[in-house]
Image (cartoon, rainbow, N blue to C red):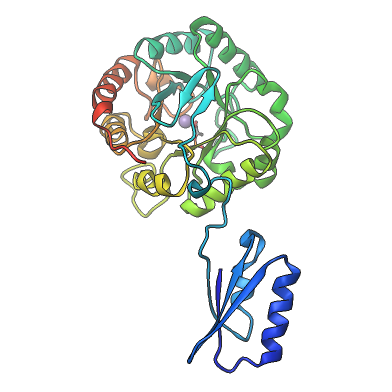
Length: 336
Ligand code: PEP
Ligand code: MN
């Protein structure tokens, strides 16, 4: 971090500033120029409140040299992270499609969809059991029973399972869930993130509806600071002024995140676009841009789905998308 002081800073004010910074375990290097005095801070500046430093009378400006996220920072990790989800690898050149219904509705539904998506090449099965719905009157998910049905589909197909957690008190029910999803609405539920950091489960962290990439990485940092390094980031569209799509898919996160972090990045075109016919072009675009995977909603009977039917693909439509994506994969943008 670099602090530029105002020209009229008095020596005793500078000494006070230095003493304060030293008390926080930082070293200071002062360089006095003709017009400005610059204080360089050396050490762990991640705990420093940059706005507080900037608000001091004697400070003209302050700038971070290093990002405030350490564990999620590419600079401190040579290799791209490969997350092992019950033997299925994501990241570092391993590409996976996570597919399945928005919500688990019945044994027949989830087992049938699981079989279909597996045949089409999906590597993981998704299914919501605890659903964060905008309306309290909408279907809220089958909860514990939904998780059990997902486990049955896993036993049936061998596909690792992915499901969203909304409340940390539900964690015991997720014992056999292989990849725990933190949904967009909980991206900044810091207590939840901190607790998940104490588990050894891989976490799929979705981007919040209106969160910046830096805020998203700081949320990953919450999980990782607790000792759980296995975080996968999932872009699912952000809120903009556009109304023709459910959200706006921000594919630019792929090159941006590939520079900033070693964590795998996957794209969810279903929640981003909101309409089934828009999923294929964006799944292909995300693949071409070098995503480490995709999350796609698939339902046996979309018009009668209890949640997100409009954006759900039929198994046949999913098969077509998966074929196109796998054909495109060898030509995808590579980072390193
Ligand atoms: C979901 O994956 O079903 C879901 C609710 O996603 P999001 O948190 O991205 O809205
Ligand atoms: Mn959904």
